Length: 48
Image 1: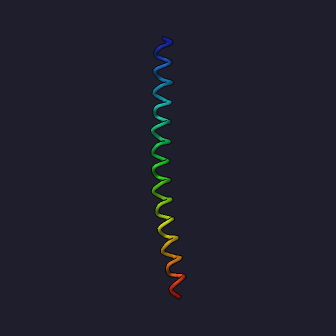
Image 2 (image 1 turned 90 degrees about the horizontal axis):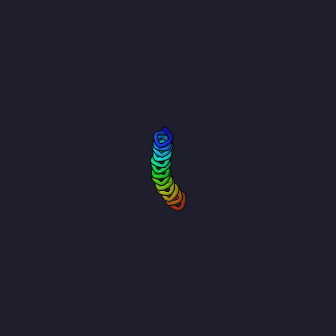
Image 3 (image 1 turned 120 degrees about the vertical axis):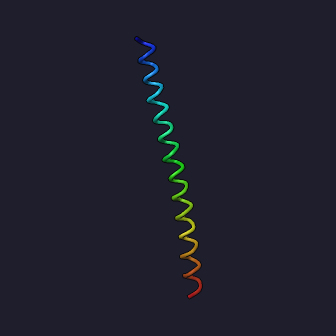
């Protein structure tokens, strides 16, 4: 019984890790996109 409970906890922890890794990857993508937007806006600002 105890080992089953441990297995469940491990599975839950692994699911949390996977979820956090996906969030981190999504945030990196969003950050890159915002950085690019910012550079484009700054470039437009310098042209005028």
